[in-house]
Length: 334
Image (tube, rainbow, N blue to C red; front, side, top):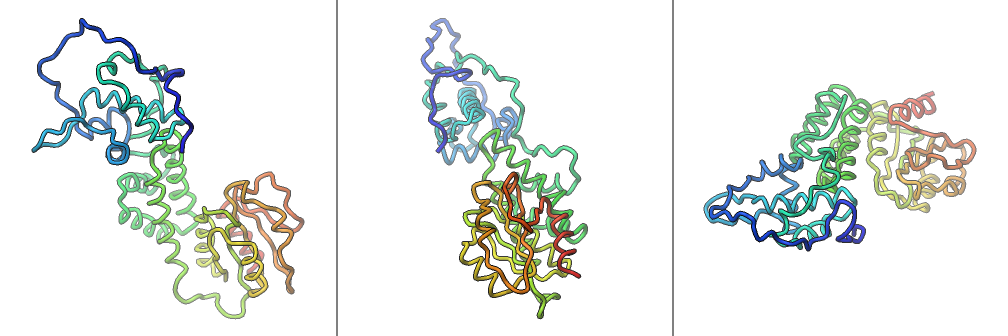
């Protein structure tokens, strides 16, 4: 749930202003706007409007049979109210309920938003300054929720440029732009889920088949910390190590401490890499409590969750996919 929504406050007028009895009455309704036209006006994707209509009931009021539903100016005014609330951190459900609570005669009398010059963060494209054509194409396919196109673009990028470049120059910029979109508008979770699922499928497929590094080689253990659900970067590292011929065992997200200890004893790894996105899941004490084996292994802390953490001695720090591949390869392939 989002923060409680208070109907009064700066830039969010409370409903209740009077109605001008001298207002001009139009006998013929003004033509409504299509979904695409309304989306352009508001700076959001058409799919976002359809989601708001389906999920929160804030949609076009023109229900004339035999033609496409159109948004009236009152409908657009409600959507603008909802947008203002979203920018201020209100949950989509609360924002929609507020916008729907304003009587239609009062919508035209609401003053303009104090932040009318707010940046247009929606629309049919993601903000991706300085990226290449592949990232822009991925962004367009992601907003269209075209999973086939997203997967094809990722696979083509991996074939042409490799995993590290695909991650750094294609995947990361798009996921970052989707995250910015969510922070600004509270929309786009479905886009992030689709991209994550496609990246997982494409990178995960690279882990299958015969392992060129199989045999008696000691592997690298790769896992996300207990409670850490965001394991996509560690999957990307697994795929990149596989491409470089480094034996590894990818243990996925949210690995319990006991399971990690058991895997460490069973495989006698050459290195253990533990990923953490959030500080809440970065536990230096767990690193100190890991079992000792002979021969010994190296421990690496990866991800921004470890920033500022007091790491145990002999624990390396990995800050990017490319540097992680280079560091681990140098430590293992000797």
